[in-house]
Image (cartoon, rainbow, N blue to C red):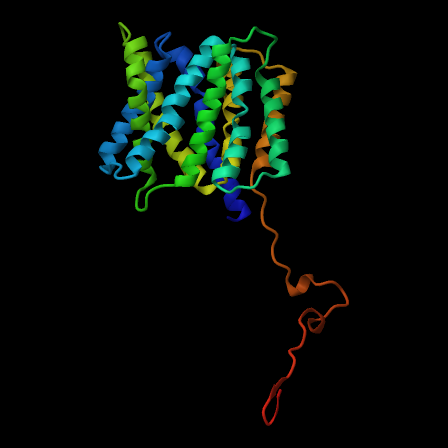
Length: 319
């Protein structure tokens, strides 16, 4: 992939975590209170069913269980564990633990995808974790062990989902639209029994609630996950994993703009550090081959390319 194309692909893929960063604002301002599982189920299942109805291409064969695995990791289990961590830990602590996700991808991609662990990737992991700490950490707090386990589990789920999506790719002849629909449907079906058992439906649904749900289904699921899965196909798994760090940046900025939350100097520094980590993790452009015009002074073609030796043949020498 050429450098310009790689940067453009990374920029487009970064739109997905940017959209996910708006989820906190939409949830607090538009959705029914205390319904995190309902919000996640509504985000995944309707959008997945709409895409399946539109494409009319169901998963078959080996892709039946692969879709269940990917949908659970990328959407169902990840979002469930994310909400458990959010309820049991301060948001800053949860985000800091979740920022370990690129480190898991670094190891998993080396084991299962064949991506080499490079020094810039390790440095980007350290920068990313430090940037998230600056961005969201607001003081010491007692750590709930269940919350910590859920945050780590969510990071592992996302990392494993990225790695397996990269390894398995898509079945031949299947577009992004049905592929996204498969995973959203699988993830929503995994969440559905938990939603029914622990939350159920709210007594009333307002116009604001419907607007919030519409945002989650359209931008928060269908559009964002299609962009995300396309990015996983086009970019190295490690590069994609760092793009997810853009989500807390967007959440922080939206909180500052719409919810009048403070934005301190350390938080601004955290934004810059995270952006540096994301850029550091992106693939470097390949060096162009050396041309004749780039040869050192004093050298000529006869020095660069040795003259072929004459071939001896019966009856004489062939020039």
